Image 1 (cartoon, rainbow, N blue to C red):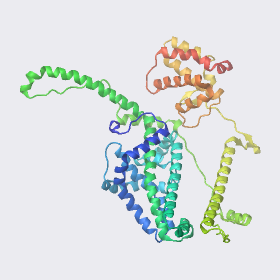
Image 2: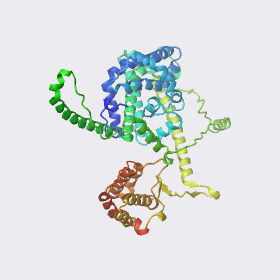
Image 3: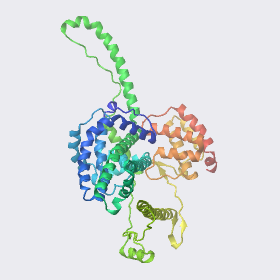
Image 4: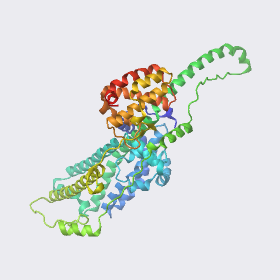
Length: 515
């Protein structure tokens, strides 16, 4: 990936700032985006709208169901536009069959259709072309920072799309003559009664207009969240800063060589020669293959592995019959309302009926979710071994990040022991001892709970609530030095480790006294 050609300003951003960047990206590329993708989108949507004249409700469902396909077409343009390449509408149209076959569209239209974070995860399938176990591992890494924000973004945009559709329909009814206003309200509920297919086709057309406005914002914001997360994981902003620094240094070397060439240009002019300056390169940057190999080695570690088996419950015919006999209600085949208050306007009665049915289903769904959460919570915190319910006790791990953190493996006074190692000329051993002692104190004394796959960054974030601001700053500095030594192979200077040895007892004095 040629990061220096990217038109976006890569820097460290919060997920909400990344969403803001996605909206700004859509505003900047709205014209070229619609010119390139609108023919392909309309080629898919318009036949469905025409089909809606005979099957209006089914047409609206198909338009909604095919949203993941629209997302892939929009992302195809955005992923090339940020590098200055704007594909034409013909190129986008030719790429649609490949997008339908090789980007996980079938899964997106079935099991993943209700996902509100699909545009945040979509670049992994479409741009990285990941699949299988590497895809799940990639999802776990990306989801740690950004997925919740992408879900909230999807929920907000979903409501905005509904408000726009409802507002447009109200506006049309307000522009109608007063005697036609009542029939206009009745048309809102045509999908429920199967009435007026022509008007339902008009509603579908209005919905497509709202969809074409909101969906590009959804895709651009999810893509910006993905780029921000990759920049955070792979240090793109740091890499670009180093590239600019390298180019600046090379230009300075080129200026010196140009001056030398001008001094010799007189006697070389008649030969028609033009000197070619040679640029000094003191370091060889890592190739993409080496970087990918390093990333694969880190992902292959045991702490990144997490497999989960999920079982689903389905209602049996016996349970359905019991539900009907007990409550006189079948949620899979609700009976239509037989009685209706004649004094209430038709449109208001239909509106009340729809709201009542929606609230009934909402209560069932919320109740089911609360019941499921209660069962999951009980299964995690209560054990029924021996036939009696007992609270589960948290078992502290014996090792973290490949390091032994058992109290028996550590000296009674880790700070003083690390200082002695430092005096013996062993800075790496002293730093390792301080790091292991701090992890042991957090896990065994402060009861820090870590999940499988958690990293040093997750451990540092959770330590702030346990150690306070001063202790968190100490631990953050310790982790930074350890990462430089363990992953960057940069042995820190003894002067930077000495204060850590002296301050360890101040931040972990209770643990030290208990030891």
